[in-house]
Length: 385
Image (cartoon, rainbow, N blue to C red; front, top):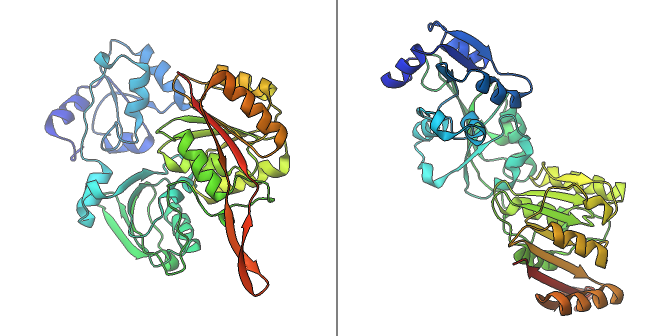
């Protein structure tokens, strides 16, 4: 309560009902009001709020309720005119001040209540990360991710209970991190890359060697061209049809904040590889479906982009094209003559761009070096208008 602005403190003190977690209630126990804990499941919060309409209800969150917090969830369901937000200093603002970092020059992330692996996509040389965590074990997990990828020298600082009487700070390096820290902390990371560190840019075109695969995959150079045509965007959904080891879906999710992907793959061994790649490369929310197209597409949420890398047929294209949202992007890759013939025919009927991608890689030939061609790929791409 001491950290609230006076006007905000008055709002809390005048509340008839206060909703929040146990720690929120403990921090505001001086206020007399009816207390309601976070409901389970959490989505029941909206029904709880609706039932309290007409009363003075305060929902307590930490710092800024619209920055990785509950305010956004409430605002999507209840008319904005019925809500007043009272933002206070956020953990990010406090952490940046403690570290002396420009907030405009850091990545602000959360793994609070989310898969910890999603921060992996942001591990890059010289990057500064501010991360909201969940449990006391989370910094250790992140330290392991950094060390495994050649960033063991990265400086890590855990900031706990900022602004309170029991504020604490813990400093160390990823490769030797062994602190026992309080839960609900904020982690600051200054990424430092070793000479042999894994470089994982968010621009598509990761090395094939970074993926587990059985040889059947969209290769690095073709994958980069494919994703350029798919145009990853914030929060957009991709259908990856014939997902294989998930290379296209994983790179789609890495390329834009909160991008989502559903991979449709009938082979269990390839779904297993795709899941492992998603975890290792920072896309843990990749959804994988066991099914054959076009039947497996029924009932899926409408996509913003569709990639057909396997299972290409006229029926699959028609089903995906019909489901695709306006301004959605479709990309189909073919390596067989039969699939190429189908793409030529579809191109005649729908337009778009048709290209042939031919890649040669330099490889040893005895004691010398020569060009070894990859299979040519016919690529058809178009935008739904």
